[in-house]
Amino acid sequence: MSAVSMILVGCSSGSSSPKSASGNAPGKSSDTISWALPPATVPNWIWPFSPISDFSVTNSEMQLMMYRTLYWYGDNGKTGVDYSLSLAKKPVYSNGGKTITIKLNPYKWSNGESVTAQDVMFWINMAKAEKTNYAGYNPGQFPDNIVSATTPDSSTIVLTTDKAYSQQWFLMNQLSQITPMPEAWDMTSATAKGDCSTNESGCAAVFAYLTAQSKDLPGYATSPVWSVVDGPWKLSSFNSDGHVTFVPNPKYSGPVKAQVKQFKMVPFTTDSAEFNVLRSGSTLDVGYIPTQDISQVKPANSAPDVGGPNPLSKNYNLEPWFLYGFNYFPINYNNPTVGPIFKQLYFRQAMQSLVDQQGILKSAAKGYGLPTYGPVPLFPSSSLVSSTEKSNPYPFSIANAKKYLTDNGWNVVKNGKTTCVKPGTAQGDCGAGITAGQALTFDLPYASGQATIDTAMASLKSNAAQVGITLNIKSEPFNSVTATAVPCSGPTCTWDMGNWGGGWVYAPDYYPTGELLFATGAGSNSGSYSNTTLDKLIEATNVQSGDSVMHAYEDFMAKNVPVIYQPNYTYSLAEVAGGLKGYQNNPYGAIKPETWHY
Image (tube, rainbow, N blue to C red; front, side, top):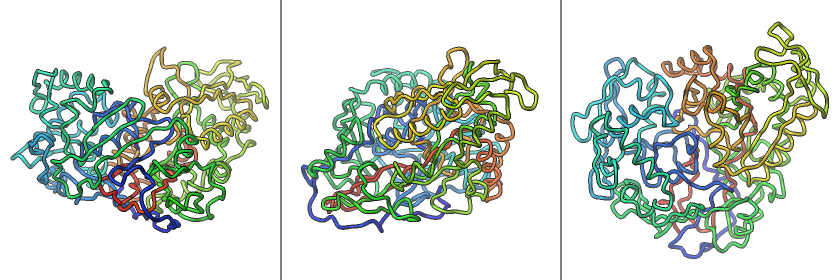
């Protein structure tokens, strides 16, 4: 997904950005805060138990406002666990690390019931029963690695695992998946009570009911299910076009309560449409400036979360929002026709050599962002980033891309059609499953609405044509791309490539290991990549702490390019109204508007 680590060096909140805006809200009322959604991206799944097609930062933002995860990750612009905002206290490990005891803080649901250990068991039972329907699932890990889960009292959960794991990893990437669910959700119909919270075998019927309720977007705001929240907000209205209004949860028992009467999400089809509204300075309290409307490239070597000159400084402060993640697009290894091509390392090396990351960052992105050379974010700087990843194994080079192909059985035709002329599996042949005369032609849908991504895709198409690769690029709504680029198999598994524009934010896997994205059979392994060596490297990061196991994993990822890396753009060039207090950028994509006020 959202796609995130605490024990890393904290990043700044962008406080060094120019701060010239002042005065009252540009919005309609200081009692209402309006926040612009990313272009062509709207929330469409309310239940935190999300399938991969709906596993997005935007959905997570909506969900976390109402339904808190067991632990809160990231705050004040820093990576890490914030226990002061968490439903539970710091976990205690015993029994050689295999027993984890969790004590809940005293939180309440909006219907007056306490958040209890049984609500945690509700999630665990659902995760066990319907794990293949949850995008955060990876075979062999949570909940498979939980041997037993007990509730000695209403505020205590005791988990026993099948072996000792890295405590850092278990906190960041396993306990992070748990969102306690209220008894009010344990239903098999509008009138029939379920028993999933106490009985795993009862979860199938509850899953079916909650899934149906999740698909009923017009009913979100009035639903007796979704109106039971433990977060600081609840829905007042929800429109499937993206217009969403929240009001404070009067029963919220957490430390920071909402300070305005309404919070509104406002959708836009394109970044240009949003900018036209933002520029008027009269309706949006927090928006974003498209990179094409930045007149000057930001200063070189400045941190990703520090802004440059701000054309809207009269009314807004520029607070670049850089997420802890990496940007890539998947390729479908299970596609019956082109999957065999994607399985050839030389082809992936050629494709990666065609991505002009530095050129795109300097021109289209105006310096806002960083290149991606592997799965561990280059910012904030930390010892987790290996020298191999920093060095960029596949710099932009048309000549190198051509050589990778010609050395392996392809007749390269510039601005034409490159075809396989040496089918077979010997050295210098095209590789297993590739037929004589097969051409390098692929469909590549990408997320619409952002000029920077339009430019990047046009650049890649042009570069690919230089070595006879045809990319049929087409812009589509974000939700359409994510719904198509999912794990699949068989004759209907026909998508080629898919670029939803933002890659992955490390959430709910906050430590930057690869089990959720690249392990064989993982729930968010969109392209169905599978490699036994990589599986072992990933497993090592789960049971051992420290830099060396992380470096071995990321070095493999950097050299073997299982996905196509692309620039890691600043998620949002956030423009924050002058006078708005309490605004913070969360490195994992969460928003906390309960702290925002005038």
